[in-house]
Each structure stands twice: as C-alpha cells, then as structure tokens.
Length: 182
Image 1: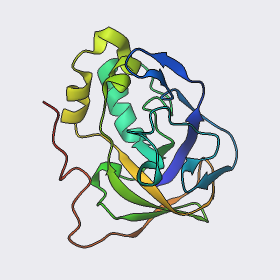
Image 2: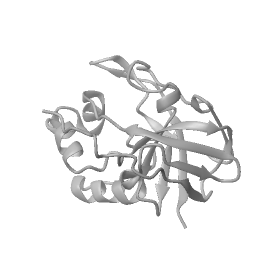
Image 3: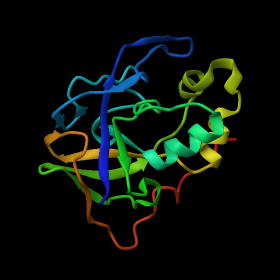
Image 4: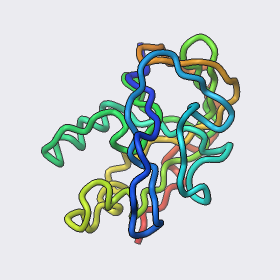
C-alpha cells in the first residue's frame, strides 16, 4: 500500500545568491501535522512567485526516485532533500494525471496540479557550482514529482496510507506537457 514516509517543513532559511534567500532546506517533523489550503503548517516558501500558493501548496517526491538519485550522486538523500513537503513510497507520483485526487491518512485530500519545474536554486542546493547542468539532468530523468492543491484540510503523519481516490479519464499525465529546459 502506498504510504507517506515523511512530512517535511523548512528547517531554516538559507542565503541564496540567486533569490537572496531560499526555503529549500526542508526536514522531517514528528507526529501529526496540520495541512491547510496553503500547505503544511510551519512551512515557508521564500519565493512565492514560483513556489507555494493554492496550486503549489504541497510538493511530493517519491522515495523510489530519491533512491535513484542517491545512487547517481553517491550520497544519502534524506526526506526533504528535494525541497519536498511529502516523501512518498509505493506510488508512482510521476505517472499521476493532472486532476488526480489522493487521500492521505483519514482526512486530507489533495489534487495533482503540475510537475515541479527545477530551478537554479535547486541546482545550487544539490551541489553548488559542481552541479552545472543539474536542472537539465534532473528534468531529463523525468523524476520531477508533482505539486498538489489541498482540497480538504486535516492532519497527516509519516506512515499514513495514500490512496488514489479518482483519476480523470483523458487528463494529461503529469509529465505529458512538460518541456525539458533548453
């Protein structure tokens, strides 16, 4: 059964030469955590032009995809490393359809809205100047993970089941419309 591995929030804001500050440093939190319309309680998005808001309230990333990248990069990539709020397991998040609805735990429902668009802040977070070409490499692997809109508020915690409640017929797949960056 698909499940939630971790719920992550900003650990600390960090300086970023591109945006001035970034909230990409996410870490797991213990226990039940409130999910509201704008995401996980106590989380922050430093660049609200590109992150956050109702259509990007949450970002989910799969443990299976993180394990792939751990092998590629030769290091451990703990929950939150990708800036995700939700680390999942047992659900192919990249095979989701736009408009697909998931129930997480007993109360929270979310809707898949769009894929993550990797940026230079993410590239600097992964490896600084040693990761030139990271955005293109990450995109080419098509392991982007989805942004989610919160349809029903509630509480979640690590270990909660994830269930696909509905999958709209004919809707584009998460990666169907994605164009690799030049």
